[in-house]
Image 1 (cartoon, rainbow, N blue to C red):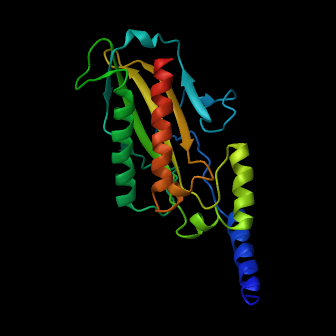
Image 2: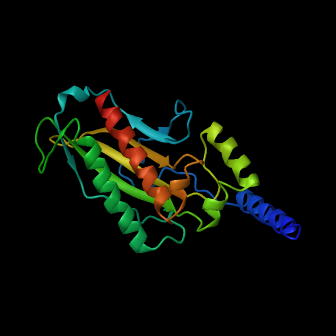
Image 3: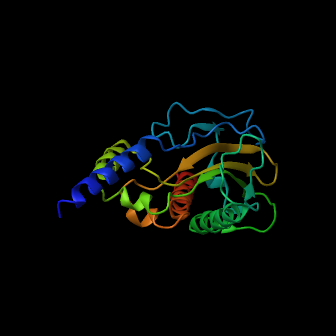
Length: 221
């Protein structure tokens, strides 16, 4: 119908405006983290997903067990949760605990106390952004949104009106409490991942899954 063409055009224009005006959070060296003073900008991380890190020379093969602290929710003034509710933060923190422990279990025994040969991991949820309801999904099938998200997919960047997760990982020798590795990471789904755009926290949870997989893979390397 001809009368629908202007409506489609208006929809496309609205989506383009929303895309270009969409705010995203860029991670910082959160001052409330114990490892903040030793982390440095990671120039080797071309993806931009791990902007800050600290690495010591570690033989990961020395460790066969891993102990996870309870995931904490960052309360510092430089937190990046926007208007995310406390209930949503708690849900994401619980999901992070579950996913990181599950992925680590493939290579390590999950410990309940500090001991030699054990890693201690502290995870801190420092920021998150929810999907934009309805428009987030529409922007993956609408012409203008599809073009934008296609370009973002090639670049490995965030999609339009997509949620994300930001967190810090600090890894210690459990017996000596020596800091072995620390990093801040931002994770989000592929811009063309429609399934991760439906519910408000779907993209953030997808980011947690990706982050947990990378965490486990790095400890095995």
